[in-house]
Structures are given as C-alpha cells and as structure tokens.
Amino acid sequence: MMMRVATFAQSEQMITSALRVQAVMANEQVQESSGLQSEDFGGYGPGAGRVINLQVSVTRAQSYIDASNLADNKVQAMYSAVGSVTDIITQLRTQLSAATTGSSTATASVINYAQQAISQMQGLLNTQYDGEYVFSGARTDTAPADLSTFDTGSLTTSDTSYYKGDSEIASVRVSDSQSISYGVTADNPAFEQVMRLLKYVGNSTTLSSSDISQALDLASNALDATSTVQAKLSTAASQIETASTNQSDYQNFAKTLSTNLTSVDVAAVTAQLSTYQAQLTASYSAISKIQSMNLASYLR
Image (cartoon, rainbow, N blue to C red; front, side, top):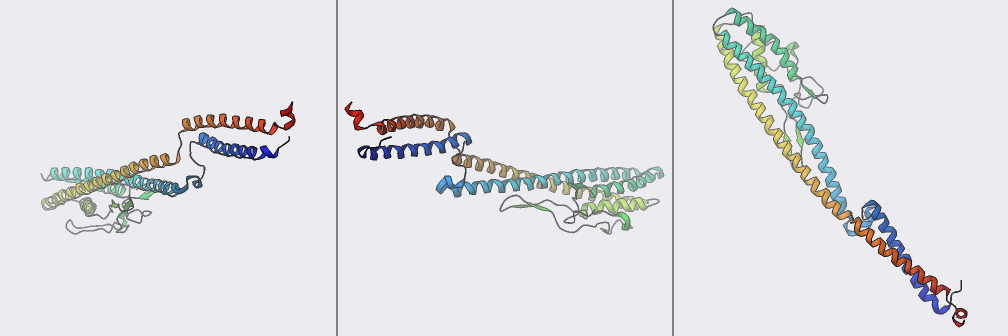
C-alpha cells in the first residue's frame, strides 16, 4: 500500500473517525444485549451516586419488609394463642355458672375442666414461632410457663411464679424513623388471671357458693383482659402490615426510578446500531479508495 503525503492527513482523519464509531458501536452492542446504559457505575457519570443511593434504599426497604413479615407472623401466632385462651376462659365461666346451682356434678365438672385446661394454658403460653417462644420477652429460647412451682391458693392475690421469661416487650423497626411494639409476655395480667383462676379451681376438692361467685368475677375480668390483649395484637398487626406495604410501595418506586436511570431503549439502540454500521461501512470503503490512490493510477 502506497500512502501519499497529500492523502495522509485525510486518511488518518477518516481512520480516527471510523475507530470512534467502532467504539461507540461496541458500547451500544453491550447496551443492546444487557438493556443497561453501562456495566459498571463509572458509565453513569454524575448520575452514578443517585443510582447507588437508589439501589441501597431498595435493599434497606427489603430488610424492613422482611423484619415486618417476621414480626407479623409472630403477632398472628400470638393472636391465635390468645384466641384459644379466650375459648378456655369462656368455657370455664360457662361451667362456673352451671355450678351456681349447687349441683355436685356441675362442681366436679368445672374442677375437672380446670385441671385439664391449665395444661392447655401452659401449652398456649409456650407457643413457638420459628423456634422461638413468642411470650417470653427477650428470652425467646426459654419456655415462659412452668407449672412445677406454681401453686396458687388464692383468687384475689396475683401470682406469676409460673413465668420464666423477662419483661422485654418485642418490637420491630419498620422504617428509618418508626418502630412498632407488638410483644406480649406470659405474665401479662390477662394471662395471670386465667392461670390463677384455673389453678385455684383445679386444686379445689369442692367449691362453695362464695368461691364460685369470686371465680365468676375473676373469669369475667380475665375475659375482658384477654379481649384487650387480642385487640392490641390486632392493632399492632395492622400497623406492621401498613408499614410493610408502605415499604413495598417505596421499593417499587425506587426500582422504577433506578431502572429509568440505568436502562436503555433497546429498540432505539438497535436502530442506531444499524445506522452506525452503514456509516462505518461507508467510511471503510472511502478509506480503501483513498489509500489505493497514487499518481501512476491517475495518469493511466
């Protein structure tokens, strides 16, 4: 190949231009295959920081969603257990009402029921979710209800000696600025009243009319208290679910915004590639002609 001084500058300029087009095409071919403007953050220039912040916020939102879902499942487990406690105390009150007639059969029946129900209560207070005791406060590896040392002898004196957990109330962080308390411990007054009542009735050999009257009053108080606990759990569940939904909505918004900042219109890129290909073909054809020109060929 002969390169004339007169054609060198023009040829060099065209080659440089063609190489520049090739570089642009290589980048757009990557964009076409990946659907992204760049394979690394450096390709986003001044917008890289915004893209990174959005991706971090999406990850953080997911951590809040996961924590909320776990807490919500625990609340559902607690709510179900408290519902069963309500059934127990309702049944006990019904049997106590029947015993007000003075029937020895009815009295024996309520005593027998209390003896069985206290074991059910222990099982409910020892409810686990994902391997953790939900009514133990922070001591989630310890069963909160232990009947081995629980021997109440009074309907009027509180007794939480059965409780082996601590006083920590569980909470969950659902956003950068919000935490929701949802925990209930097995020594909650509602549960203590039920345990005290069941233990007293179950330990009795007979019940006087005065005992039955006091037991009915305590049963009514316990039923009201357990209903209050259920209502608080329901409220906590609603708050947690709302917070999780808010995080999901934000996450979707952030993902969409991040996609808008990082993605390309593949169809447009494909069309542009075709244009560049035609331009590059024409450039190489022109370069070939320039490089083949010499005086001898011209004088023929």
